[in-house]
Image (cartoon, rainbow, N blue to C red; front, side, top):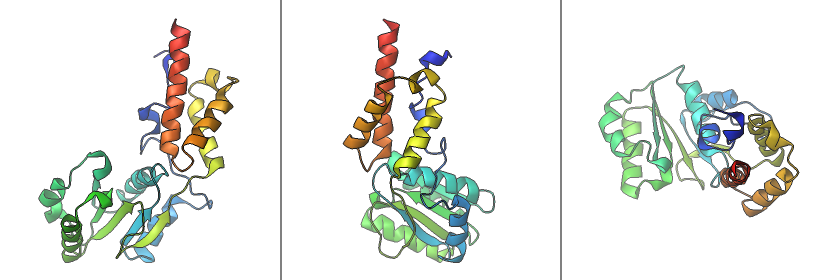
Length: 205
């Protein structure tokens, strides 16, 4: 693929798992794993607004947890794995297992109650994501947008296309995107994708 045809803000470069979550306090994601096991005894939530990094942190944590225990991961927010999969897989939820649910709030009241009941009966661990604090779950981490970290991420992505990095309209496009989506980095990156795509189309004419 020619460099000029690469859009550094395309999904494959910015989707959860493709980028690494950076804590605004300078701490490590690995420390959150330790806190989850020890401080929260394997039962907690990750809370934050749309596009603030919950799914990215979720994916990073899964990679780390996978190294030490059986992990059953469900991303309901993208329909990657439906809640029906929980019903067929719950027999594997042993006391050593971790059940991770991204998009917990999308479950019905009945489904959420049943999930908690299944996990407790099998003495497994449970980590969920949501937009607001959820009754019965302490907050392991609150995600939010840090402007400096967001800009650093933008610059790392632009390393794929150095010609875009030196464009005079880069900062204007970025500031407009951040102003339009101040609490949503995901939508900011989508807007930057449109900006880069517009440049590609114009250059191809």
